[in-house]
Length: 531
Image (cartoon, rainbow, N blue to C red):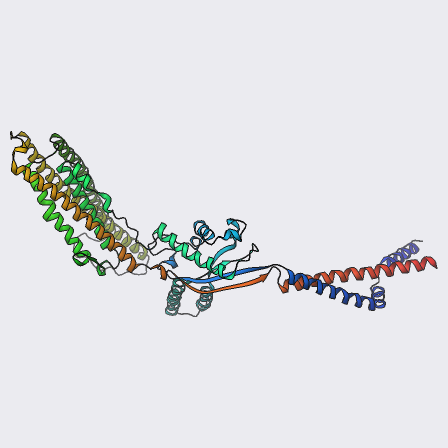
């Protein structure tokens, strides 16, 4: 009984299973229709797909290949040392000006659409190839130390050459489906580079060394005329110091010794300008100070005395502070030297050495104490550098105190001279022709000195501009345009279109075969029922 049930179960399962041979036979019987419909489907798909492919919207890709040639590009810097990034080229301020100047609102929906369409890429193919080549060379385990050093030096040299002539691609992708005229696309990309360079020069001063110089507006004739003679004299002295410092800044720029400018005195160098400034200080400003001190000439009387007292008080306070700093450096150096001397003595005794006698040359040996000797030598080097720094700081403080002593002496002499004239019962200055003549001369001298300093400031700026022009890259050499290409590309490529059509054809084939099998099954079932 149980055996019969098992046989029935197997028979039922067999009937339910799909016989592959039956399926093949069923499809073979309908092979004519299957092939016909397959051909029809393929033809329809090819015709419809071709129409869709040919009628699809094209978009334009424009590309400008260029290189950046300015000094520092390989380090991410402009020639003046400020930071450079390729994002600067497509910054919002740059693209906004390009968008407005070329009236791109006629083509783009808004500025954001244009901004998303443009991008800049760095072409690193040569660098990647170089890295791969030398990675393979350096991977050789049989290389000697000399060969390895040689390959590494070659790689660094070749890498620097590639980075110094970095190649970039500025691309207008056209993903927004905007179709610009080819000439306009080229102009937009070229304008982007021009606007970037102009803005970078104006806002970051990339064509100028990063130093600050005073302008000729720092002081005016009105400033001198409105002030007391002694105060005006001080203003001229401070201005002259500032101009002298600016001249030294410009003189420190590369190429400054080779540059000359045209003046009313002929060709002038920076050395000539320095001589002129020293001449004004020594032979015009100093005698003017002597005249004011000798005659005690003042416009404001007691206020001049108060001004000199205030200057002396400030200078004394500054000198006291500097002397305290100098003493701190000296005491620190003395204490540090004493402590180090004690440590050195203890170290020599612990190693069995005496503190007297000539020093012997230490020859490092690769024994247990070799690394201790290396550490000791490093500590000695650090100690020497620290003592040198303390000594240098002490000398610097001493030089500042000397300069302050000169200033204090200068103002003390002026103060004593004005005090003498104040205590002296002299008649009114207006009755003394000599004093009136001296006062008139002082006024003229002050204006003359001011004009000389102003002209020197202007000449200093001219030197600065000319040094920038010669030493840093001019605009025309900042970048070099290599090529421009513009191609129209369809949204869906031929390859992609072919893949889509094949997939659709396969889907239709599967549906058709399924329909044939289903229809054949229905026919068989109907025939069974009829029998």
